[in-house]
Length: 154
Length: 104
Image 1 (tube, chains in turn orange, green):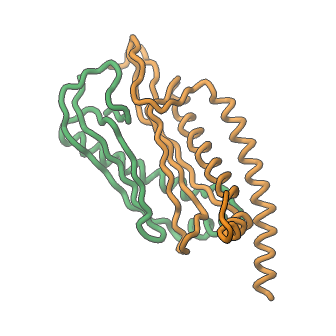
Image 2 (tube, one colour):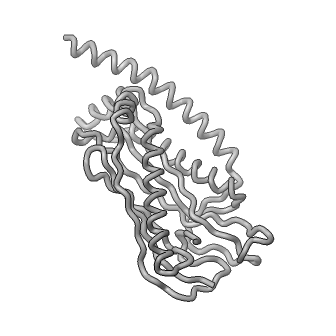
Image 3 (cartoon, rainbow over the protein chains, first blue to last red):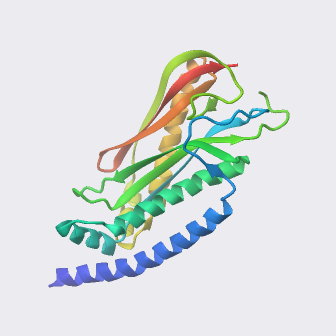
């Protein structure tokens, strides 16, 4: 009985805080995506031939993000009859967009206009239990091209 | 040292290939971070401690790769890739590799 009460408390707390945190995160993501829209991110390997040639450097962004207790519980139920697990879909969507934004912020600090050859990498953080996704890490990286400063060696 | 994940450097001619260079770093988290992470598993949200930990170890992997490239006389690393594996509970390996080259 007491186990059920603890479970119910975790579910309610997870639902409340998790929903609040997710909405706040999405608002912040949309705002920063608008602010950084001037940087183009492309998946091609071959940059255009410019004159004078731009400088290039690696930029990366990563984030580790965790799903709340309520959503993990829902995902566990979903395992019974299969289908879309939308609670994990939003988790991964948030993580990828956040990683891209952090990468873009690094590029913006360099004054870059383009990021070429973007790659994503996703890792599930192992929490000791089998088949528990829980937290994921997403890394996004690419090559930022920025105009060479006059006087810089090259 | 220019580090890029493209296969060339715009505007620079490639003079010499020096082969693969790599760097890796295995890190474990400490108990405090682990405790915070288990709380976050109830509330949801970003695990800032883990984000920083993984970023630091990735930076270390890149700097080891860079040292290796410098030791063999390269001045750029092309086509850099990252690979991550969670090898045990609480420890992860971050691996970076690329091709060391000499450009003009």
